[in-house]
Structures are given as C-alpha cells and as structure tokens.
Image 1 (tube, helix red, strand yellow):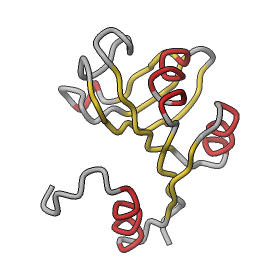
Image 2 (cartoon, one colour; image 1 turned 60 degrees about the vertical axis):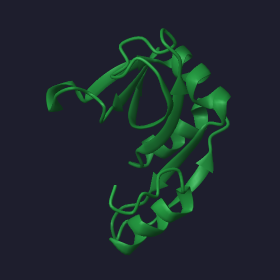
Image 3 (cartoon, rainbow, N blue to C red; image 1 turned 180 degrees about the horizontal axis):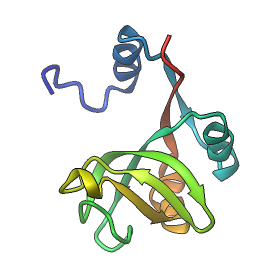
Image 4 (cartoon, helix red, strand yellow; image 1 turned 45 degrees about the horizontal axis):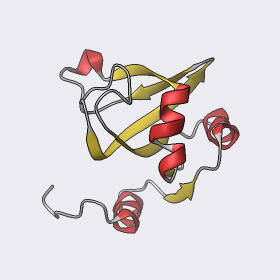
Length: 118
C-alpha cells in the first residue's frame, strides 16, 4: 500500500526478491502446471477476477482483480488462502476447480511463483 504499485507485477516480483524471496510470473496453461509447482512445494499467488455468483464461497462477492494463494489440489477442489476473508480462521478455503478454471485459467491464468527463501 505505501508504494501504490497495485498491478505492477514485475515490481512485486522485484520487491519480493529484495526481501530474499525470488520468483517469477507464469501464465499457467492448465491444472497440470499448477500440480507441478505444488508438488515441488511452490504455492501459486493467482490473480483472479469474477462477478457475483461465479466463485462459490468467495471471500468477496466480486472483483476486477484479487490475489489468492493456491496451496493444494484435492479432487474437484482447489485449496487456497484468500486474504480477503473476514477473519484469519476463514482465510483457508476450498474453491471448486471448475469455477477457478473459468475465473482464473480462462482469464489469463497468470500467477506468481515464489521459490524458497535464499
């Protein structure tokens, strides 16, 4: 917030690297690529956008741009941490994979991948 650099993706990667957390941006083509990262302990900071009703159990009803952290896959569900949740106990969530396919992968599928701290 102090820098007002919302949406400047390379600047966010650079800022994280300056704090010892290297990373990069990736356009995820499919869930196999997501599984590959998660299988190596690399959570994904995904940029999603959706209208009311497009994402069941969403922390906020709609957004033109919001970041969530994908932490795992569980069958038809995607495990995420959603920082827009009203309380810390509600940050971990399960979103439906087919809904995230429409609200993330089909709408660019861009995400940050951060490597372990150096």
